[in-house]
Image (cartoon, rainbow, N blue to C red):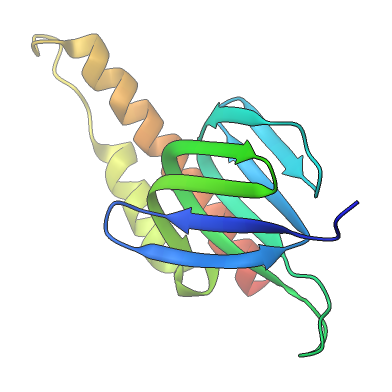
Length: 146
């Protein structure tokens, strides 16, 4: 069995990375799942959360890990290639706990008027945005050891 597989992370505006990895932890819509070399094919809807990829040891040194906060999109494992198509992807080290807290505070203060057209759809969207902000804040705090 192979010790690594190809992993691509792509957003609508950039190819974030395309490298050989030994493991990926993927935040799907209905929970996290792990990907190892030789995994059965899968197509899943992405949620919001931390995408972590582990790199194999190589002649360049020890592997290590990298994490991204990803939102929305799809993930596909086919053959020995994992493709993550995310609406947004931000390296965890670029997240700020204070900015994430401010974003969450603004979303928590926001409300949808009772008479708004398509009110339920707007409420659902606001709730998703709040949950996404909570996830981002938790990841930012964990990355900074807060």
